[in-house]
Image 1 (cartoon, rainbow, N blue to C red):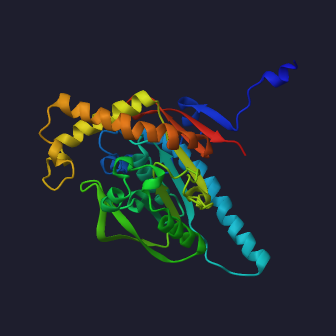
Image 2 (image 1 turned 90 degrees about the vertical axis):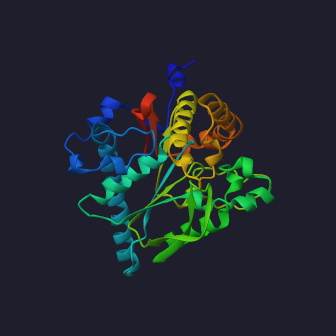
Image 3 (image 1 turned 60 degrees about the vertical axis):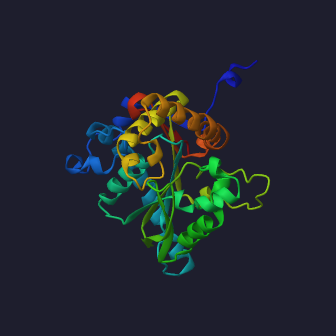
Length: 316
């Protein structure tokens, strides 16, 4: 056999942490002035070095894509002899429960808003488009919360279609992790962003399922997509650690959906958390989330303690 055929090719270009960090050694941002405590999620360490080594090069890459996006808009306007408003650039962020998507989303929102163009950057999570608990109970899906079928996909797709159609203002549902439910009569207002970040575990998922006939998917509206990746072992450990921290904090609130677990012993709490992981989060990861990893434009590969060990970029 010709040895050329034995070479394994990949649509991605891989970088070690060290290689990636050297792509942008002189940040344009005063990163030392950023309050990291407002960006990191519970039990997800974030350091200035992580911002400088990982996120600054990522922002520079996104700036390249954004510049070409804006130039394409202007050139199309010239071609059609028509002056139109720019359409928001949408960045999707996917990954497992406990992977650190929220921290990644908030860091990107902050840094992108600090670039010279000072774009307006909005961030939403798809949690607001989950069916309310009462509806999930009726459909027998309360124990499959986070699976694709637990989301009300129609309004989510309608929202993204409206964004890409040039509509100015929007209101979307709000989800409360305290109440573990969509908050009735509370909405998040979105006012014509330059960049919209959409974060959710299943945002890159495309399998329509047996009863779903739609052929338009959330990811169809993304201009750039990111997958936050980690080993199942680390994800489980992070999930358990977070659960223990929540018992000491949010679960102590009498209004918390999980207040009943506030008095559990550590042994009993970990037994319950492991059951939730094994019965809900792990199957969802293996069946729905992980298979979408290579649909992303950029993959963040994490190691222990949530720090990034490498980056994969889709080739162009």
